[in-house]
Length: 232
Image (cartoon, rainbow, N blue to C red; front, side):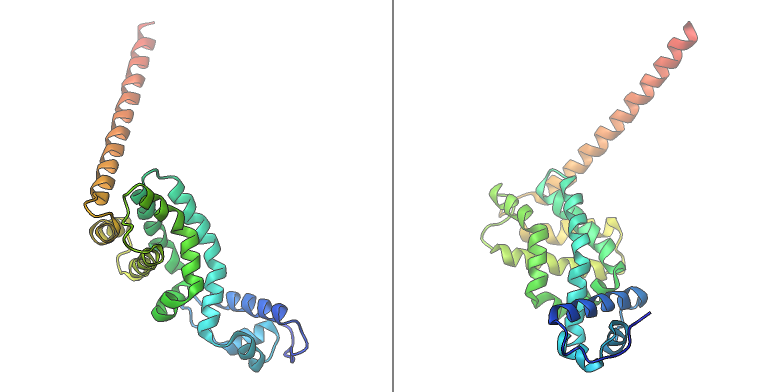
């Protein structure tokens, strides 16, 4: 149940902002379409509409703040899927597959993606992306796999843009995202004369071959064990 509307002028700014952002997050959770009004946020937070605008500024700012709060769990998940891969390009590909699949399901982040200009230029979005992907990009540059003639910040911004495009695509399947990554992203970020896309494809083929060989070995072992048992 929401509190009664009152003038929060005498309250601590951070406390009121936190309450407003929490209310906005709840509004996004209950409005899958991502359409949230400041009046509804103010009512849920128990403050006046004027106070909500004074403390938050605009709906665009609300979208950014809620999305940044929600992004923390996605950043953790992205780093987890990247940690499961050994090659630099495989890490980035895994991250793109995850974000294309999961980000559009979060109403606040979907709303942020829809605000292309705001999302692309907000320094908080950029810093969050650096936190998620920066170490991997640097690792690729140290290995001479990712180009170092382009600033890290520019590479991050490019990957963020590609993430948005993949997340907004009609086909967000793993196959479609892999195709986008290998055909368009890898050629743009790999070191000149590199073979990042080919390396990923070859690695996947080797993984599939190894898995098939292991399965065949297990079947053969089971057959031999059954034969030994029947001879006893």
